[in-house]
Length: 207
View 1 (cartoon, one colour):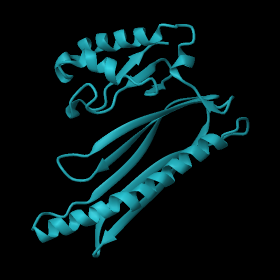
View 2 (cartoon, rainbow, N blue to C red; view 1 turned 90 degrees about the vertical axis):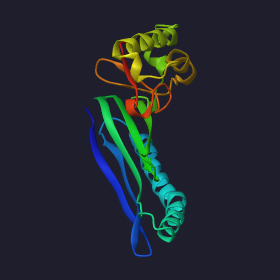
View 3 (tube, rainbow, N blue to C red; view 1 turned 60 degrees about the horizontal axis):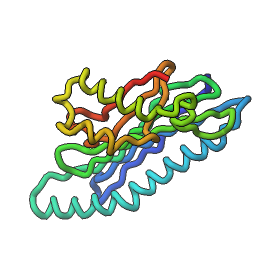
């Protein structure tokens, strides 16, 4: 098991003496005496810095424009948010697997979340793919798609879009997976195959 330290970058940006944007960015850093973790650490650190830059250079100007518009029209002042959190799903050296949720709120009924994942074999200091997980099954994508559609029927088709079967095929992304001790988890983005109320759809598969 790796020793993983959670790092955080937080900030509040003010405009006309009012906080109009907050950001809360988490990123992992691994410490090991046996594996080279510099590539993992650098990638996650740089991602955190990129998000902070995005908050300052992209979201902040939009938040200022929204503030001016709302204040001049008597609308409530809203605070933009950027929140980036990670969850470690497998920590068994040399394998580390995790997913990251990036939540952005810029007004409206709710914000939006985009999920990404990382799957590392630190013995080789690199990430691995679904091809590597299912190396002994050349038809693994067909297996995955069939299993997802079967699980949708078990969960209840009413919480998915009516044409979920074709949407699963269209939006399946082999990069959107992570591992747990016993399963591969395939995930879809919000609105890919289901409405917002369903959240981020996930499916557990054996490997």
